[in-house]
Image (cartoon, each protein chain N blue to C red):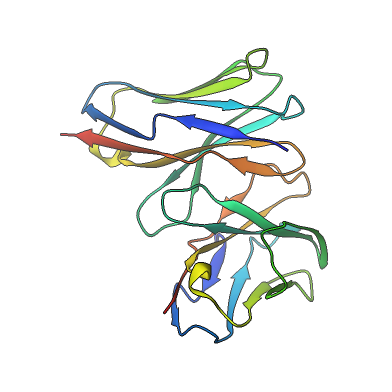
Length: 109
Length: 113
């Protein structure tokens, strides 16, 4: 089955800096890759997604890149703000959703 | 606009008791998913429904777990004879028929003493 690995597990940046979170997947049949943000005590919130026929997608300060050949995808957050502090999960869809273990992002003011 | 809702938000129970959680999906969504999330981990798939039909169950879903979606709208997840290892956040998500873009509810946090 699908296996999704996510790095780093924790990430601390200064406000205004960029943050990058990377994920790899194992199943070449995976064709949909969402990213979720989870704040304390809340359910995961979809923030951006990308499909396998697209290499890059951007939405304001967040962007996702996908390299199907290497089976990896990344989340980029620019101009980070304290409210970006949360746990971020990547996921891959192939006959079901498999999540990474999460990255705890801390943005220091 | 109402998203996915779950009830209760928190549940504390004693080992051996039965508990039941409810999920109300986004109204036009045909698919409904249950996940379990333990501390420091991503959500793990438990089961999903297409309308009222339960189409897949994970090996994580032991015989003590049962889920229903009788009218293809809300769903319930029951855990019988709870064990301390059942302590986790139970998340519900819903989607359209493609199953890809899933929207999560706030979760039910279960603590088994």
